[in-house]
Length: 285
Image (cartoon, rainbow, N blue to C red; front, side, top):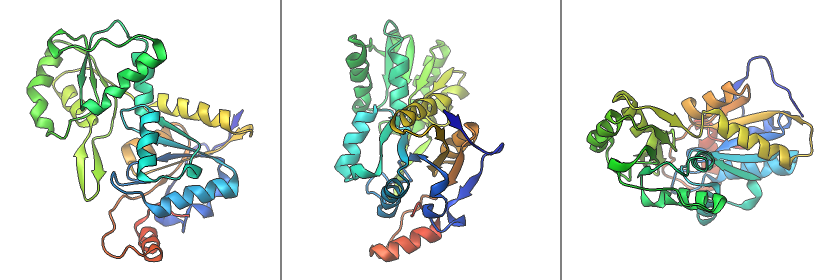
């Protein structure tokens, strides 16, 4: 298998090209972000979904959806299906939660303190499914490691005293979502990365899963290779996060397309919306 890239990867701003169709033939693998690129946490972006459908149909290329969600890919797939994401716009999903499961599956003997919403407990279900053993979940005062998945909708400052105590005790933290914030319709929510940043400020040691760190890309690329018969791989990463999607792509020496997340208000006519998306730099075909 070969990877063909320029010595310095190229980053396109979505507004520089009229659409993905202008450069699609140059790439046989797309690594596409989810939140902020394909949806806003509430609704899908139809033009972006259509762009991936047409890419797969026209080029026969592989689309891997990459997410910093702190849950396994099966859970994210179910959520996307509930939102109405068509199955014909992607080939595989890899999440930050998948990488967390890989790590936790090798630390079954370590008592863990789960810092995050209950919906993320599916992480430990997946570890048990994979290994046959349930991770040891315990209270903060008896834990030897922190697994941070989010803020449960609370303000980051609400956790400061807890974080200071955990850091003073020298507990390592595994941050299962490096994102700082995530859009949610017209508003946003804080992610685990915000708590991890505060933890580091208090002297805590943090390791991260997900973008922009290498393990998620290695897993995604292995999946892409298993799905494509082509020996030569040329990858384009697509996303709205400069510090996650674009930085991660550059560090992998992949080309990237930086799209812009902005909620469109007003007329929802399809043609009108697509034109607005082009102007704003969203993902379109």
